[in-house]
Image (tube, rainbow, N blue to C red; front, top):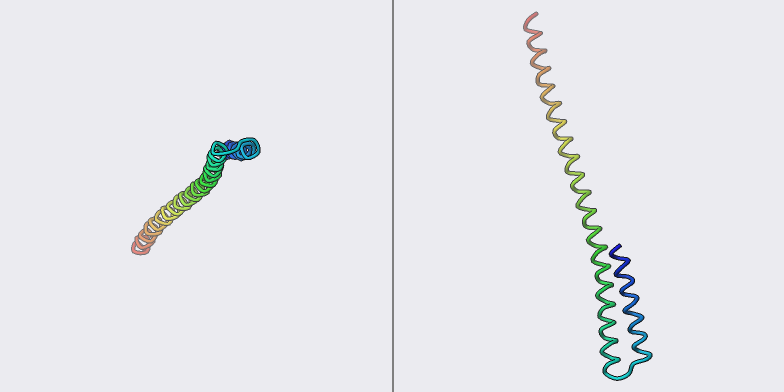
Length: 98
């Protein structure tokens, strides 16, 4: 939604620069064109930075999911190892009892 707003503002500033170029002359026209161009560039860079931030945040979420899944896998392995140890001890005790 932000990107759409910035795109609309960028287009408005571009049209403002075009209008200024056609209808205004002299220093006022040049100043207005400069301001409109500056705003256009500002809005375009804002769109680009928002897209980059969104990609970075999604990549961070992916890494968090992977780390959580690896933690759960390692805890499962620990549980299974402890069960194996208990079963081995029970087997040794059963064999000694015969």
